[in-house]
Length: 197
Image (tube, rainbow, N blue to C red):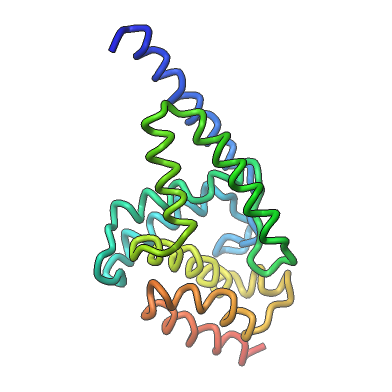
């Protein structure tokens, strides 16, 4: 690799990292556990990687934890362009998918070709949620917000007037696929929360 090629590669890498910093400006519908403010998507991604490390013993056979952590770091970068789409919002899923694909093209396209292809493949695998690693990563992505909502006194459930049945349908089914033990844990606590309302 020539000095000029190495410099160009580094320029691309830094451009991507600078662009990724914009994820800190994407505000999510979930409040922090202390109910002080809404989290941003970068904080969510960091927190999910910590969830993966701490809850790795809930991963099933065939789960590659290194890949899970990569998925969780990368999974929401498309929100820089597409924004956060709350799971309990009234959403046009087809339009969102197109926006996210375009965002992935642009954002991962900032990288040198080898990293572009690697990161895009990781993101696509997460989105497809077919491999054991992706299913576990998706489960964690669905598990973390309810844990924060329980800690913050309802959070986005209150904001969106969400019922316990909606949580089971939109969140529980996704958690149960990749981490059934975590769904059992959440389901019990969610039932207690709604019974006390």
